[in-house]
Length: 148
Image 1: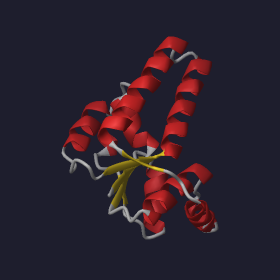
Image 2 (image 1 turned 45 degrees about the vertical axis):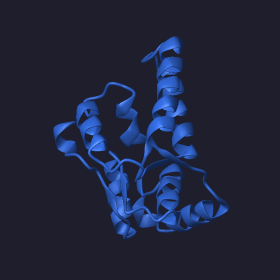
Image 3 (image 1 turned 135 degrees about the vertical axis):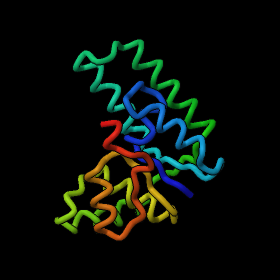
């Protein structure tokens, strides 16, 4: 199983500098092996709400983006429901203060690890560093310097 965090799937829905590279990369991954979590769904909708609040998106565009995200999710990803074990593992990861993990990122890593992900893809450089410090297979999948 390959786990994708919110930063990695957002460019599939919202036009970003990484969108083309992400679409190409995801298209090259084994069908049926891709997973996101219900937490990803919450984070994505939160991102849309923030964009509406700051004027980056109007309400109708945000609703359309959320609907497209849900369609892509249903057609492309295995959807993982976080468990109590995921929250416990996230808490353990957060005890490694040197990683600088935030709660949501620790939960992504825990869900991926508890579901035996062979890789977790993210565009968050801090999350990549934290994952590596914890000995987890966290990667960018694309060259971030070219897109950010």
